[in-house]
Length: 549
Ligand code: NAP
Image 1 (cartoon, helix red, strand yellow):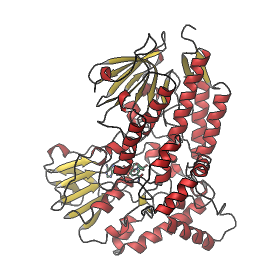
Image 2 (cartoon, helix red, strand yellow):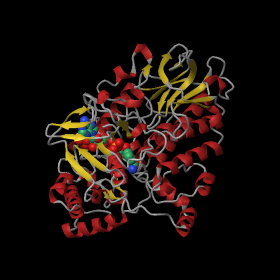
Image 3 (cartoon, rainbow, N blue to C red):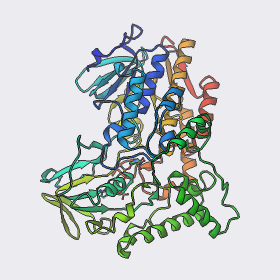
Image 4 (cartoon, helix red, strand yellow):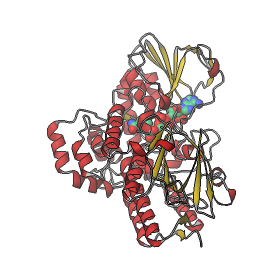
């Protein structure tokens, strides 16, 4: 559908539409719904052919979410979460995609979304306080508000290996997986990457392929997810308690309703700590990372070392061959300093199979892709299929992929050259009326995403309503507030263990990218309070103006 065919009534006369939103995943869908409810004319542009965002693109075998399903959904509409019923503790990609399509149908969202339309640039005009947004096909649309709902992990990162063009087999990036099922039965498959995605892929395809060779640079700490079907009576209980569940989740650091029964590790012996860990290991998922007082495993090095050693022992206990086991044991970074992956499907046990092998490309790096495989500094590995589970240009990649120009001809790329700078992760100074849902320096990826998204969408919608009510047509983050917020985020991160890992949280996975810790690590609960206070104080830290001055 072209933009012209979408069902909008036109903006206020000076602009084509009141708001342009980029992306039709969780954030774009809710932003559209919310602004439309407030009477704005909204147009959503989506690169994909359907709604879903992350869950539209990441259709690789084994794709699943690591937040528990009953909280990995919208909470704003009681009807939505009471009617939908998840089938497993952790939702699989097709089920999340079905859910988002169902939500879009229920809220009649499709009519304002233009699919297969890519926004390439956007330019701000300070005289009129409007944005001119340009699409890949050359169409331009003017808007008062410009909202990025592009996700934090949406710009795939493909390492620049020599020889890939001449590879004669099939190759795929997990975040651009082709439609339809692939039968790997006769294939020698190679996969590069052992992050959350690689771990899911390897557990699923190990045993399906004729042979699977895993090229691992850095091992990870995968904690059992303990996935299982959700029983009817369990679901009834969730429904009965939904209000409390959401309240507890919103009031937590992670956006997840976990009880911290063991408030602190203080005074516990190492054996007692290990007993707690064992109990949480059996419960599985993110409950393990939060075995103790929120954040303590991520900020107390002694406690973290006990936890890391506990997981290392578990890994050694699962892998038969001691040499392979040692390669799978992470020693270069503390547990949690990189995004901790989940093990849904006996990941470590996969390496006990004869048809799965592990190649350590830290010891012998990949030299090049050849016509029929991969050459490392030690050996050549023949492959029919090569899979890149190599992650994303995270947090900023999808925003910087567009050519966004703000006041004084400054591009966002220039402004963020030394790392992203925002106030609250919601706006960046010099770019009025541009809102970034789950933007850099907001809690985003350190939390249960749908709840963080809802908070951002509601804050932005309230802000726009406030502007309308008070006759403002321009809002911009003040430079001083932004500087303080960036400093605050950096300081919080420095007091934690994040600097000890080369992670995508810090941009360290993309060669040449400026390394700076990007999400706000102070907890969703605290962040919500800060944002609410800012709004209550008439958008303290923001400059509000009428275009006429
Ligand atoms: P990732 O965590 O960035 O992992 C990328 C992997 O590729 C790493 O093992 C990395 O090794 C490897 N790699 C990259 N460049 C390489 C090179 N030149 N040579 C060899 N190896 C290379 O990406 P991801 O696994 O796609 O996960 C990204 C995030 O998406 C996750 O952390 C999570 O937040 C989210 N996700 C969530 C789920 C879920 O909910 N269950 C599932 C998938 C993804 P190094 O570690 O050495 O850099």
